[in-house]
Length: 111
Length: 115
Image (cartoon, rainbow over all chains, first blue to last red; front, side):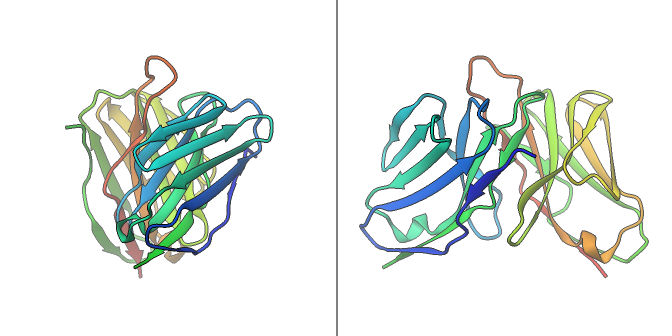
């Protein structure tokens, strides 16, 4: 069973701080990694995608990938109350465009 | 604007009823997926389809079946609903893509309650 592990949280950070969300995965053959944001009662929406080792930045979001350690993270700079949501890590499972999701980390940004 | 739609946002059924959940995508995607989402368990794959009339079991297919007669439509069927099938059901679609990036798009979800 290919697994994606996340700390369920909640992770509480003050407004303006950096939020750091972490994810580990079991399948060394995984090639593509995604971060989805899910607001309460809504469906997931993609916020970041990464497939190369290192950092990828998009606005206040930075995704970090370390394939040797099988670790992917998401940093949110200058956290805002509107960032309060559950963040799902997802990993390509290979074959048929399947994706395996972690259980998500709930982030709370305190004003 | 890409879109995945689901037939109902909220549905209440009784134990033993046959339940149909419909999903339609307008992006001409080859792949479609049905997940259920429960607190603490995350998104779990029920079934997926990679082409018309083709289907594969996901991680939790028991008690469910699917149908894909047209490329844009993927239906999830609960043959005899049970209370442990009360959940949020999410449909998604994804292209076979070009290059290494292609996003999975989700529908708004159907919250099913089985009494």
